[in-house]
Length: 154
Image 1 (spheres, rainbow, N blue to C red):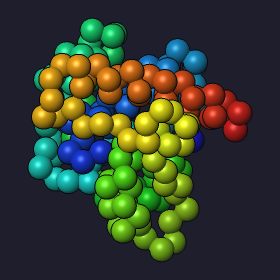
Image 2: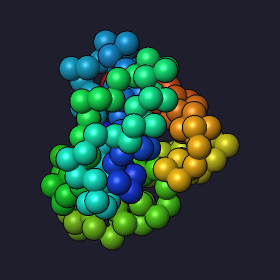
Image 3: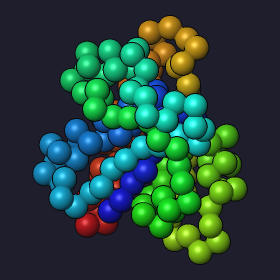
Image 4: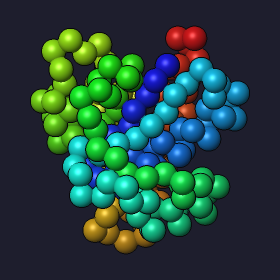
């Protein structure tokens, strides 16, 4: 199973989703069976580490995002990944627009897929620390649901 998490710049939400889910997969002993990555639809932050506030909030919960670097979604991602999960509707629309016609990748809105109380992971970039905490809360719950779904498939 190959999963790609996508937000706008790949410095807040999608690297957090990658880090949280990677830890869940490692704890489940499924590292050899699940490939995980993240990317952004925009190119502003390519090559940069996640936002310092993102890394600090994640670190306080035991997630290490320091080695991650932002990258932009490319056409090949639609053949390299089985499931591409967008953090919000705007990014899902961008992914749908760039998706090649022969792509077999499943596209979905991460939170909507698991009927959590919100459809979108809010972008914490312009807010305070509580926004980064809220993102972690949502992504931890969604990661548990995603892992349960994958276990049913395996």
